[in-house]
Figure 1 (tube, rainbow, N blue to C red):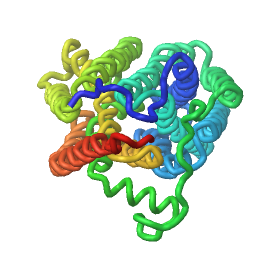
Figure 2 (cartoon, rainbow, N blue to C red):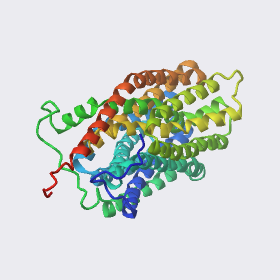
Figure 3 (tube, rainbow, N blue to C red):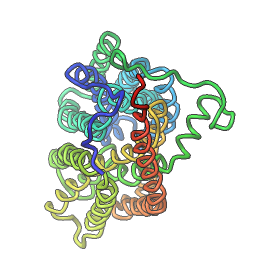
Length: 445
């Protein structure tokens, strides 16, 4: 089924103003990603600054992502209830404060609290940007808009791997992290001054407060229950769970130590390989977005293909018989890891059509939680296994296969149910379209 159909009744018009407003929201997300991934190039420096081992180092990212994942459903509810502008502004305040506090931290406990605060603010950005795109652009643009938003997020990752890594070496810890906090202040001011939740004439219907299909629960409970009942929401969550975490774990914390300590590369060379992951992500995101926009049925094959390719390359590097994997294999692995982010975005394309506009934030929160739960689990597993095995990265990285197997089993279990439900909605919408204009010839409407 193609998504290249004409605009639906009530669709937002899109246009230049939509691009400008949505681009401002994406700018907030861009800065949040810079702050989120800044630790990925500073892991070795953080271990020295706070005098910690691998498990304690992984706790930084685990806590940050734990807060992020735990906030997804509350943030989705906030976006549905309060709108995008308020949630994005609050997110910018929190992640900027967290980045600045991290810059000034000298004790491990204070630094942990700073990353938790940063994770809380970061959690408010991506779902808000997805909601902003749905409010300002026609529905048929949904897959491409989501992939482009993710592409700009990866551009933020690129800033971390290229710019912050160099600044950290030249200017030091406090100047690098503290100086970057100025970007958070800038996007906060722009959000307060210029961002609008939706174009004129396209206000969302007011949120229902009464009881109903949610089983007598309040607004939050009803939103969560109804979103979870949709097989498309659950399938989207497991697609996100299975596809996102290998690249997230690699970029967020363990890629740099693995390439330097286990593969014997210089830090500059390792940084280039992390950049390859980011550039691959950006290129693949554009390709996946175009394919899905034209061929809706390609969603699941693309997701499953990415899982298979990731597992194959991860196994090849972990199982290489020599002390170090050859450079061509490491480059290939980084290119394939770049497809993980775009594949995880496919999860939102399963949840989006399964839920009405007033429930999009909640459904997106459920989906987004999947990949971050997998990332938290793997970050912790790798850190524990490294300490237990004397820094044997090959054994530690095998934890990836356990999570991939779990996610793949759930995707295969839910795919038929979600496809059947989506076909029922398509048939129902066609029947409604046929019957709406059925007015008697002599009447006026």
